[in-house]
Image (tube, rainbow, N blue to C red):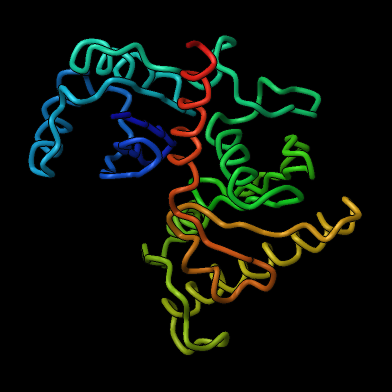
Length: 259
């Protein structure tokens, strides 16, 4: 079985695959100070509760946008699962896509993995919108090549900025308001952030399509994707497992190539 780890700025996802099938998944707050031993205690207990044997793990793959977290995660794989993890971004790891931008080294590992998975599942000519700490738009060409991106502040970052910068505004969670015009502070904040992001997403999709010159399809992923998929015009599908599925796909391809 494969252990796939997606370390984002806010959360780290651990998923276990049996072949191409995901059999378990857990999420933890990303903390670069967490030791391999702490990861191991937490993760192996969850695996056992889920009826999985840690000794059954015979492969691992990691994508991280938090460099400080890499030591703990790679050591976890080596020490407690006795496997050498594939690390996205390592020159020896073949992603199977051409990166057609000026600075390929600056693209987040998770976004490249999303592009690989999206092309495999949905074909080419795509915009992959990831609702994470940042809201990112990644363009996948007709042949699966990575053709550029847009990065905007994430929804929760915007809410936190309102709370921190305005003394009388409370900390709130994002949800879809029933009306655009609100009669109180909290729903007014929710409306501004939610419908403001709907406008941002629809506007950027329109501009990307116009600049690209083709009717790109739109795939959404990330924790908040379901909240926007129902409303944003143009989103074809919401795929919460896109990143970990891409990690499993890349691992399988690299393992097959090495045999």
